[in-house]
Length: 351
Image 1 (tube, one colour):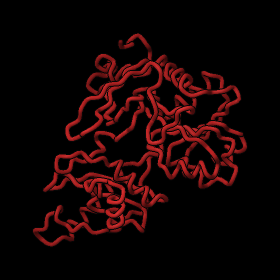
Image 2: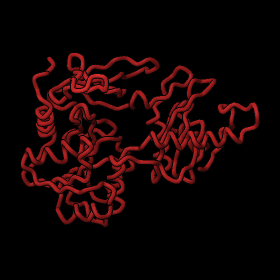
Image 3: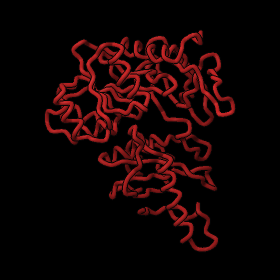
Image 4: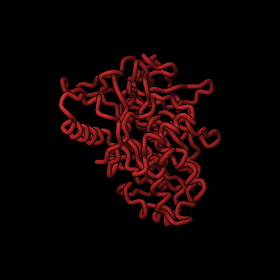
């Protein structure tokens, strides 16, 4: 049943207890938190959890100082490191041999952990990565892998006290839209048209907007956010899959896949990348060799100086979309009269 009697602070503390039950923590652990506390991961797991459980914690004011963070981890002897895939990769590359060797667990969320990152930290520092999943509305931790059963490619199982249900999505052959309920789910939203009034989730179920699959063992695999899919010829194509393919091809670079309108197929995929070597021909070949659908091959690949990032380590898709639209506007202005934007040849272009 829903738990409307819990206050917001109690829901945060419930999530702390859920994490403690899910991942073994020891009195000797030292948690290193470089994540900002304006983000729920940095706040609940990085600040509230060590205070509530009596764990020693080291706070760093910004996740962007990779070399300084690697040095502070070594100096503090930290055993647990909170990070995102993007930041952890930076710390591992910037650090000297041994800088992160005291870390027994790197707990990552907010974005998918790439295979390249796992290989890097395992080879250089012998660190095990536990990937988890959460949203602000669940305080945030909803699921995570565990030391005794770590399944790369999944985000593990739900934490204690949580339940889920999936709703089908048109154009998706497997998985569904994830709804969550539990003691850590928020009290509700406060909407602009009703200041001060909390609008609670119906029957306690929060709509995450994420598309997932759940196997017979309860392991959850994130397919992507519903708004991060393109509908091409009636089929749903995950933009995250496009980015994953690009990361496999050009692992040292950043990539952002975006969907734009297409007069013939509904939408088309455009890939922004900071890789000077990225090209559509290599992408097509890689997709064929790895059984990736042709629909996941971007129609365009555009080189940009840098992929915009948020302070949380996630791609700033809002700014990326503006960059793309500016580029398309420039191309449209140069196109011969009568040539529609969708008919511009799918060439590589530089911004």
